[in-house]
Structures are given as structure tokens and as C-alpha cells.
Image (cartoon, rainbow, N blue to C red; front, side, top):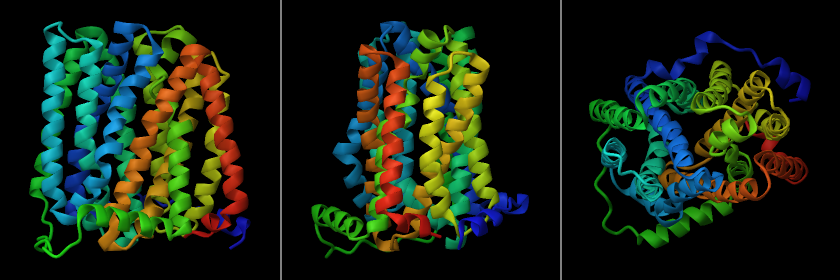
Length: 416
């Protein structure tokens, strides 16, 4: 298919946008998860601004993200084996309940005035442990909720609900923080987990087969997952896109609290607006992908996203006027979700069912494991130079990587 031909096929269909919602199990997941995500983004916004208020240091923003991501290196691969061995629903009920308890603990510390930066960092680490087991099961569960032809649409709608919460959650969180304090943001988040737990329990999923007692050890199964991934050049390239994007591109998100104050001269409300602008752009991007339906040029669209995302990130780093910053940040969000959504769907549809949990764990390890390293690196650059320079460095590294992909991995553009 020529470039002109695939561009001519980009016809958005409102009828196709919510195709995955025709499946009952996916509807339960969608409405339960979006409720929980509203609370999650309220907590992310409040937590970042709280630790910045306590320390006045952008480096601590990186420390929190690093603490949340470190468990990915320690437990994510084990979580992938667990997702292939036991009921993914049961595993997620346990992890979601753990996350709810941690949110209530943070709320209690904040309400009593005892909260310290190390409390936030420790709780972020414990939340990361729960996420290390939750994320592979969550990704591997998606193909059980819809038929394979509608998986890309379901993943796009997952991004839609995530970014709907990203739009409204930070704005509401910023207003609640300013009016009542951060404790209420954490308390509301704790209660929001009830929705997704109930949704999981109500799903009508096929009974899992009993585990094979003759299965190899967890270490052997992890090694099998890596062997499968490295034997597939396309999957390896997709993992590389996720690794580079999370390390050098996604790091702008934890820097937003410092950006709102140091670069734009704002406050907690400015911080909420920045998060919401990024989320609104991502929401528009996710809805755009979902509206394309069962399209067959995902590789070309992904390749375009790897170029436009760093360009927009560099432009954002040069701006100092809030309205134009918000508009550009929306474009950054749209390009980011385009890259991450398509990489995720292409990995899922390119992987055999019996290995999906382990490959999903490698994918999530790449995402959650390298994100904190990138956040730590970029926050240190911002601490010692400036936030804009940190984003510019990341943007130019990603542009160079996009050129590398274009030359040495042309098969990515051919993916359907």
C-alpha cells in the first residue's frame, strides 16, 4: 500500500468508535476502571504537588516516580508468570484491593499532618509492587474481554478512559487540593477502587483450567518469554519504541508540578491545567484511533507518531505563555497515546496466547521499569540545569531514534 493510499483510508467512523462496548465483560471493565482512574489521577496530581510543596525540589518528583517504578524491575516478570498460571481476575482483585488500602494510608497520614516526603516515597514503592503484579494481568486480560478483531478498538478505548480521567481528574484534584487539602484527593481515590473490584467480580469469564503441575519453573518460563521476544524482530522493535519513549519522552509528566511553578509562574491550579491539557490531547488521539475501526495501517501510523511526538515536545519546551503551552501540550498528549496505544496493540496481536502474560510482563517492565529511570535522569538534569533543557534533550534523542527505526526496521511500517 502506498503512503497516499493508506492516508486516503483514514476515514473516521463514529459507529466503530465504541465497538468494544458491545461486549458485556468489556463494558463492566470500562465503567469500573474509568471510575477508579478518576481517583488515581486525583492522587497523582495531589501527591506530586504535595511533595513539591514539602521539598521545593524537582529532584523529589523524580524520586517518587523512581520509587514507584523500581518494583517493576524486581517483580514484573514474576507477575507475568503469575498472570499465565492463575486466574487473572483473582490476581487483579488482590492487587486492586492492595492499592485501595495504600491510598487510605496516605490519606490518613495527610489528614493527621504526619505526612513526610519519605512516607510518600515509601508508599509509592509499595504501590509499585502491587502494580508489578497488576499490569501484566491487566494487559493479558484484554483479549479475554473482546474478540481478536476488536482488540485494537478495546485497547484504544482503554486509552480513552485513561485519558478522560487524565483530563478531568487533575482539574478536579487541583480544585479539591486548593479548597480542602490533598488528604481528600487520596481518600476519594481509595473509595474509587471499589468500582473496578466490583466490575471484576461481576464478569462472566470462562473458568481457568487447572494449572499443569508439570510446568517448568518460574525462571524457565521467564526465560521462554525473553527468548520468544528476542526471536521476533518486530516485537523487539516495538519494545524498543516503548523503552525509548518512556525513558526520554514520558519524563515530562512528573516534571509538570515544577514546570507549573518555575517555568510558567503558576500554582496548583496551573499544575492541574497542564495535566488536563495533556490528557485532553491524549483523549482526542485515543478516540481518533478507536474511530478508525479495524484499520490495517497501524505500522505507518505508529512510525509517524514516533516523529511527531518529539517535535511537539521540543516546541512545548520553548513556550512560556500558558494558553499556547496548553494547546501544544494537548498535541504532545495526542502523539504520545498514538505511539503507546499502537505499540501495545501490535505487541498483543503479534503474540501467541499461551505466552501473552509473559510477553505482557516484558512490555510492562519496559514501560514501568524505564519510566522511573528516565524520570530520575531528567529530574536530575532539570535540577542541575533547567526543566526546558531536560525536555529538549529527550526530544532530540527520540528524533534520532525515530530515524534509526526508519532506516533499520522498515518492517515496522508494514505492520497491519
